[in-house]
Image 1 (spheres, helix red, strand yellow):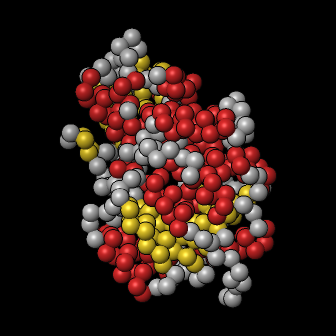
Image 2 (cartoon, rainbow, N blue to C red; image 1 turned 30 degrees about the vertical axis):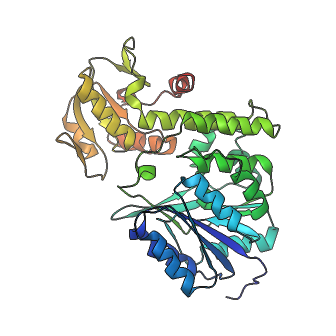
Image 3 (tube, rainbow, N blue to C red; image 1 turned 90 degrees about the vertical axis):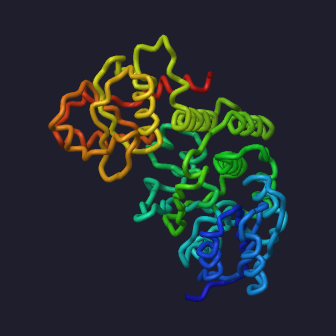
Length: 390
């Protein structure tokens, strides 16, 4: 359908050594149904053919700009893209991801109807090797959505609502985006999108949430970012210091959101370092005592770390590792179907996830099998908060 094309959308694509994914990414952008685009490809010092591929695209499409720079990381690449952009609004697309044909058009519809500072897509896709999962926020009215995303209710409400703080899910007025992006420390190597989104939300309440998808977040086995994200101390302090500078109290909901994310990211990547000798339980599962016969339910990063810890310390006896459909193994231990629990003896089933929504789904699966809730061990969020002090 025809659409007014008064708004120029700058699409910033940070690129580093993703030549196997780059054609699909850029093709998905140049073929958008909304074509009033300025496409800024930022080659962040790639050592593969990415730079050459970018230049080839630039010769074929007048809407494309290419920025070649020394490798400086994702934050510096986004800043370089912001400096080169001249559009009314900015959208970010990572160089190994891709977007469906009407992805930008959905944002422009929001611009035409409300002219907000930020348009936020509330669903996206995670693409795995052989399947794709839709990740969707529990859609509420606009005011309630803003209260959740802006941190007013704190971290647990964000978890329950399945909120994703992804810079690639937003379309932002360029002037606002440039100011905020340039305030972020270049030394942040992971989760900089969290810091950027929180800063954006702190600067404006003119946010439109749209119940549209179309972004495909590719889960690469060879990607450090997708494989082992770390919410480091610098993200925590850099973001909180920024909120101080713009006059937002550290006692606001944002602090709880950031602290909660910090604790969960630390737990999901550095599980073993939090197991103190004086603990008589498996931190942060307070009801799993040393010497227990345990089942680990969950094949994500936390589940794998727990398995490694149990095998390494021998302080707990691993009876089984179960999940619904994953196919992987650690040191010869393979994942078994959940109904295996009906045929084995154990003391506790550890729900190995930090996502509250997924946690609830896994508990429901166990209850449907007739497993009593006293046999199930859930992550203790109170103990998790202690990570912030370490």
